[in-house]
Length: 129
Image 1 (tube, helix red, strand yellow):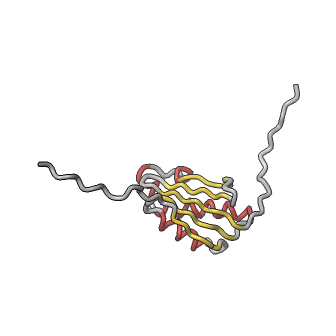
Image 2 (tube, rainbow, N blue to C red):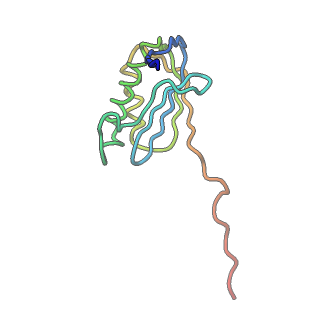
Image 3 (cartoon, one colour):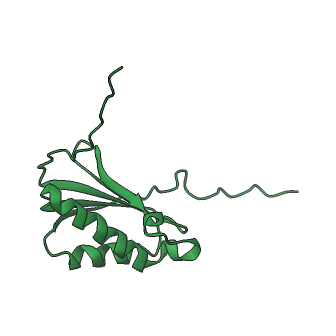
């Protein structure tokens, strides 16, 4: 019986503009780097940095994670990114700081994708007699 050898090679990806999706919750930060067709290239959360408990949502953890992902993406000829931010959290500041410090990446577009509650405010109750 012949054995099959699996080789793990990086794809030759030469896309210049990518989309950086940032989801900051009160407990964690997730960052995913995709191409324009929403195919995931790189990504992960602050658990990759071995942060636990309350340290996962700090701006410092998001900054370090963003720098790691952007430096890893430099091997794929990353030049410019679109930024899509979802939810609220303290980690937004760290993401912006990391993008500014990595001077090789241009920020083209920032989109806020936090959902808004539908239905408006609660109606006035009728008086009881």
